[in-house]
Amino acid sequence: MSKALFIGRSVIDLTNLVDEYPQADSKVRALANDIIPGGSALNAAVAFGYLGGEAHLASSFGSGGPFQALLYDDLRKFGVKPVNLCADPNFRIPVSTVVSTRSSGDRMIINSASEECAHVRDLPDLFDSEYDLIQLDQYERPFVQRHREAIRDFKGPVILDCGGWKNCSREYLRLADIPIVSEEFFAGGADAFAAECAALGIERWAMTRGPRGVIWQDGRRRGEIPALEVPVVDSLGAGDIFHGAFCHAYSENSEFVPALESANRFAALSCASSGTRSHMNR
Image: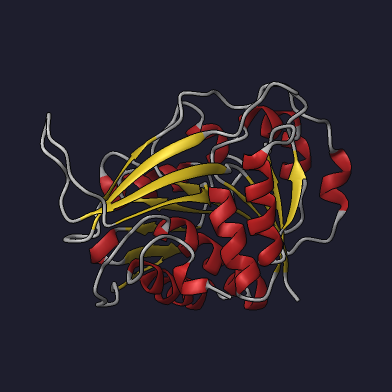
């Protein structure tokens, strides 16, 4: 069984599915509402666990309460082992509001106003386990900074999930062996990102582009993987699911492009259903 450590964001998502986005100063009736676990690292770890791997999720889970219980219960269903990084008793799990449209599958996310947990635990033993890979997602920066050397010394590949450019992005890229980024991440597109990776000594990378598929580079080789044609219901979390599926496939066989193709197929299933879990219901 493959084994991976996911370090990053866990949140509570308040989700609303509507036909169309409301206009200013108007109201619409939701087709569905839910309160679900979310966050890029959490969703990726769940996908990894669903596919049969042993996922460990290092994230800030607060100091108890109903939201922590909701997250832990979700992780338990998929065999994900949580590691609470936060040592601040007053930290509260972030809450995001998500509005998705049935007509196009687009979504709008309002992130929590709360900051990351700054008072984190010192967990050097966390990296002693025999993980096949580690994934980072540009969150839990205080913990990543504290354990930068342990991550840098890790013998396996470090995968990086990047949705949007942040002030800390280049810092994370320097820790990565394989960054898989969204098209919005790097100004100038694939060619500019390829140049950035070359300057940092990164030989393998991929860029997801929604309906235009995935572009990848492996050394001097570059190629594209077309998006699968599915009826898009909801794209919420599809990128996170892509990363979890990639990590599972790559940890099983270390084949870069086949792992991307596997992830592309699994993420398409997510887009064809509402929310991030309906295609993985057990």
